[in-house]
Length: 408
Image (cartoon, rainbow, N blue to C red; front, top):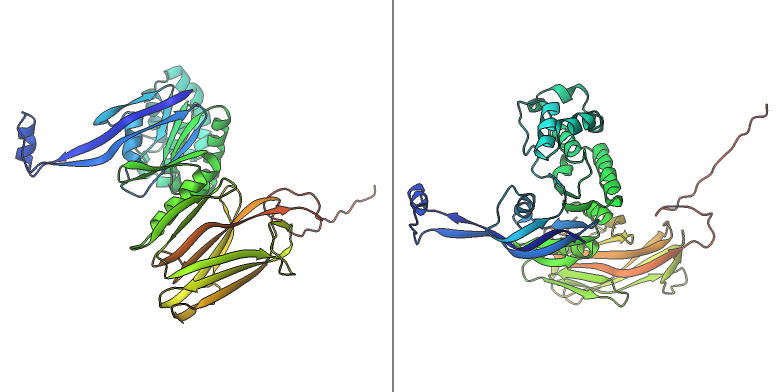
């Protein structure tokens, strides 16, 4: 069942040359100098009960505008939003709070605006205060709070009662690591009870951990929709995209999506995972010695070249990553048609499961200056446990448990 239905919703503003023209427009007068700024173009999507959807995009893409129209604090220029159930939202930090009120007063006021009566508010207030964990500051004016403390109160208010839809817009990024973990635990518990989630964040790990679908916004419209890891791959490649570069996605035979971007001065020609006998591997044993062999060809003279690689688990979370800038193995003054072979030796100290290799060719420690090539899912392999004791997690480590039993 759909708990949220967005149909052809758009938002635009008029920009007037001066205040006189603005006032005259109230009486129907129009000026040729008046401009229309289209912040959000007509978009449509649905969110089902219990579904978690990430909304991703660069600053100015229209994410916050869209959320405000869903919450009802902003009216759309066209289209409609239909919400079925109770909505709780954390949008701009401190939005709806009064700096002269105490944390307690703001909490009570916020819950009243959400439609809860005095009896319900008084019953939940002790738990709300305990969750926020700001001590005596709860009865101090909000103006003496840090941004992290404001975030604690805002999140505690929004989640004091389990909503049908929880909307979070980047706000958790200002909290400390402890409270972020605590907040995501509450979000996940709500999800298990059927709450739908709309999350705006640039935190790839958070999105891939709690969301099962993602929407990518650019220039006020949805340009991609799908699995969070596919969307985040495309989004990261889009950020790295430079003039004259390519950005493509293709479906692999296993159903996964491979994302490629780059300007092409250097290209990844092949990648293989090999064992000690130089035999190609698709399946690796826990802690097995392996070699990642990458062949690169330079197509245009470049001053320097850096290879980066990362291992990701099946959820797209980076298990390990580095590059030849950090290992101080920079190659300089490369000519066209030169070929380079990188042989990366490591132990597959990983838990059982599926893993992928990400490759990048740049000119420095990151891809922000030059992105010659970026290849997600350059290679996929399975890790199985053939000779280790049973263990949990994505990391294998040697351990020695010593037990000393004292006789009575």
